[in-house]
Image (cartoon, rainbow, N blue to C red; front, side):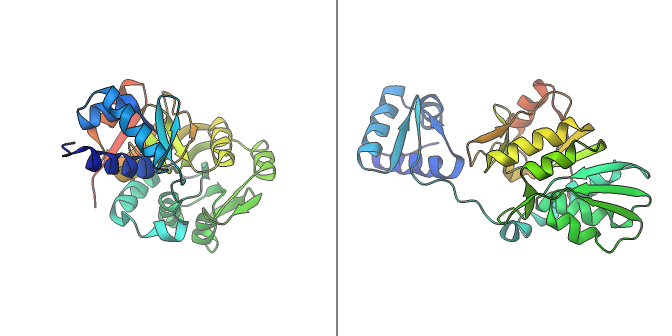
Length: 258
């Protein structure tokens, strides 16, 4: 990233820390093409100025990355989400029992499943419930729990207890971000725990995330993305991240826009 001058570089460091989360000295050194000692001086100055908080080996933004509400996110990357949802729906077979996470892309999948026959859908998301509430050919199970307004999702001990009573052919998870290094990024530790429990109850696990979320890490809570899970994204996803994920044994399906 060509940046002229220390002031411009420091402004960019603050921008990266705010938009992508935790930044390390090594990453910043590679990004800006300067030495690690130069980056350390930048971070020391930015900390002294009150613009960043130092961490072991790096820095983070003083203000947490703002989490957009589900309503705000619904219109983003609409075509990509629709293509991902269409592909995901094509994997579902009549008579199966599937589990849907919350989120706008998984909500788009629920819309695709409105024409399904003989399907049972359990969900933690209000969007999926609204999409399928009037579909007579789909049996809908709500896991319940505590409503999280920003994500329009249910979580907590009641949702976790409900999961113990069911198993699923497939589970479709959403994500705030996905990286090869850390896995699935979420804003809330309760969300990461619930995703892990959902995955354990299903025979096949899919993560639905459009390209803008690949390589993105806006928050600091994570779900491991193990070999055998399938990430479904669109053709604009970062090819280096895709290669790294595949090298780790993650199945990656890249869908083309409709």
